[in-house]
Length: 119
Image 1 (tube, one colour):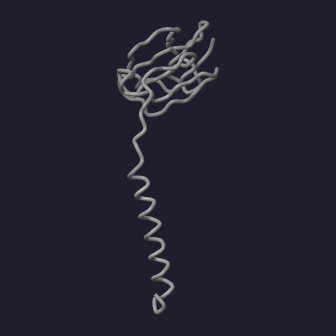
Image 2: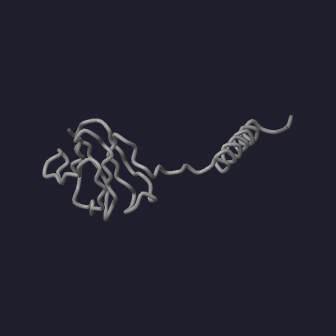
Image 3: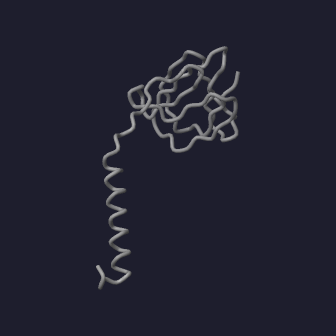
């Protein structure tokens, strides 16, 4: 490599780094989606069943904007002490439909733009 240009040496080092990174990424095991909504949480799943995996979950009081929910999704309220998850059509947490503690329902999420968690 004594007669090799600096550009060629740098390209060889960069290619080695990319190959090592690629190998690490390919060797990584896939993540497993959670399927059971934990106690004290409200969860929305990717699809209509728990096996579809949890898409989002909340535990703390507040209004949360949600994006890209189209079609039917499973909603599970595993909260306790009368905490509710409200699915709201407006992004500010108004015009809502409630899911009470212990309920699991499948709803068309297309019209909803926010979630409100409150006691």
